[in-house]
Length: 162
Image (cartoon, rainbow, N blue to C red; front, side, top):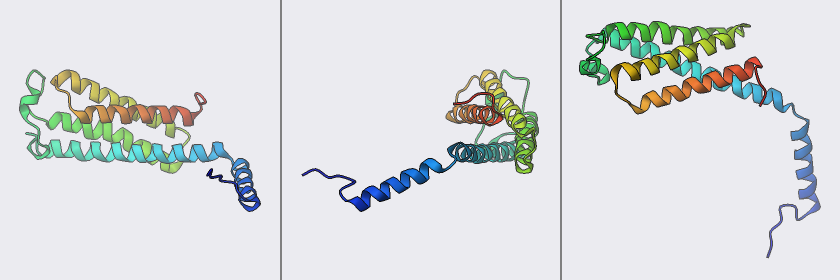
C-alpha cells in the first residue's frame, strides 16, 4: 500500500496554497533577519563571556577561580593572569560589546564593528595558543565563533552573495 501526501483534492489544494504563500514571501528578507539575529546573539555571547572572564582573571590573577594554573604562563612575559585579563576584557570584550551596541542602534558601521570584533577574537585565540603551547577545546569553539561572526558580517555587509 503506497501512501501519498496528496491523496485528496483538498490536500492538493492546501499544499498548493502553502507553496504559493511560501513563494510569495520575501525569502531574502527572512534570511537577512535570521542572519542579523544570529550575528547579534553571537556578538552578545562573545562580549559577555570575554568581559566576565577578563574581569575574573583580573580579580583572581592566579587563575584559580577559572580553574587555571599560572604554570600555563611559564615561558611567557606574564607571571599572573592580570594583564591578559585586562586585554581580554577591554580589547576582545570591549570591541564585541561595541559591535553589539552598534547593532542595536542599526548603525551604518555595525558590520565593520562585528568584523573587527571577530578579527580581535581570532587574534586573541591564536596568540594564546602560540604563547601557552596548550590546546583546549574552548579555543576551537571561539575560533569557530569568530569565523561565524566574520562570515555573517561580510554577508550582511553585502561583500558576497551566497
